[in-house]
Length: 197
Image (cartoon, rainbow, N blue to C red; front, side):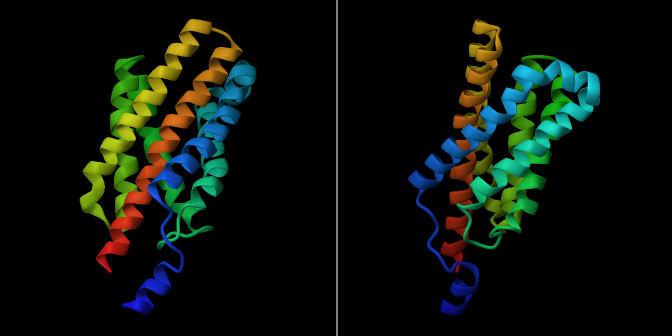
């Protein structure tokens, strides 16, 4: 058993507090950077890359920039750089579900359904990746609540300011809340796996 723990978990799983803080601050900064491209270059991106190309670029930016930050929290199974693979699958699943709902159902309903479906898919990828499928409902709830809080509070700020500043605030608030949820989810799956050994 000691050998197995050493192979899979040579370091202690970060505390919940550290995981939430790292996720919130790290993903918040990443989200600010991504939303800055929306605030100042959205029109150019849509004209140059089209809507699909723009959204895929934003997804890629989130994955590339967040992978390093969130990967610092992972000490079980999917340690960096392999964590990028898992996170890319998780975030792309979330983003694809959100986009399908948003473009299919429109604003508000689409955003809500997309947040729910995307959070469940992200939770499922994390749970499957860390072999803790029973944690899927709990992870889904954590991710959905933090995602919704961040997204709709951020959207309210953007609607109020209707300016690049509003879009930047949107990015910060969305990133802080959702990043906290992702950090918490990563802590939960790792803690559950180490407790099984």
